[in-house]
Image (cartoon, rainbow, N blue to C red; front, side, top):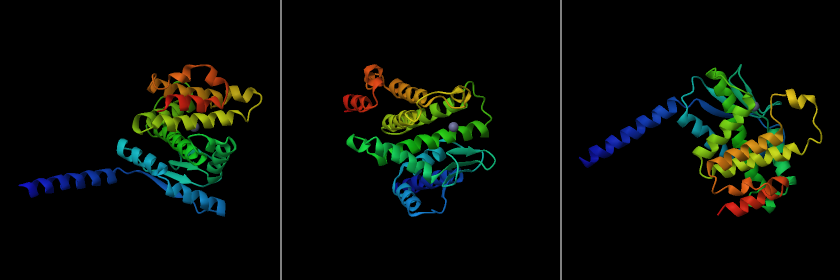
Amino acid sequence: MRIGKILFILSCILIYSIHISANAKAFVEYSSPKSSLESAIVKELKSDDSVSAVINLINHSFNLPQKLKFTFGGDDGPLYDSTNNEIIIPYFFIEEVKQRFTKAKYSETGVNEKQATMDSLMHIMFHEFAHALIFMYEIPVLGKEEDAADGLASVLLIEFFDGGQEIALSAADLFYLESEDRTELDEQDFWGEHSLDLQRYYSTLCHVYGSDPDKYKAILEQDYFSEYRAIYVYRNMTIS
Ligand SMILES: [Zn+2]
């Protein structure tokens, strides 16, 4: 009886695994590195579980109508190519993100540049995944699709990952760092498909705050919005 029960449970696990694998439509491909720097990035991506965590969540939670390839490498991106149903994230972009965090001296904080880069990469993967979902299911989007993609990325991180708020905060920090590239606005900023980096930063903070207003109440204190460095302050104040 007991053996029968065990066999039954094992069968269920097996059937479940086969079901998962049959639906495992999201997968990753690494383009051949063209330099030692790209080789190092590939090594870092493979040694970290951030990429596989995103892929696993997609395959366990979404029954995609077709295969979806995440390609690391390439000359352009991050982007979603609807023709091939492919998400492309270039190595140079990952290095650029890491350099931004490195220059911002993230290692002086609780989040080192490697972790901040991987966190941001998870947000970017889910952002592009949102574009793929919108295309595959022809989902109507009111307002900017880019904002919808940011929102879904933050919500998936916050709802499905332990410490997902912290991951989203790294993505917010990246938006803030990118906003520093811009010293003045031109017309393109107003008709462009993306919201301003600073708006993306605040929107992401709003999602984090809304997920747990008590824990993240310091986000509301305007003083902490005024200085980039102060981001660490509210982290240190609110995370125990
Ligand atoms: Zn986008």
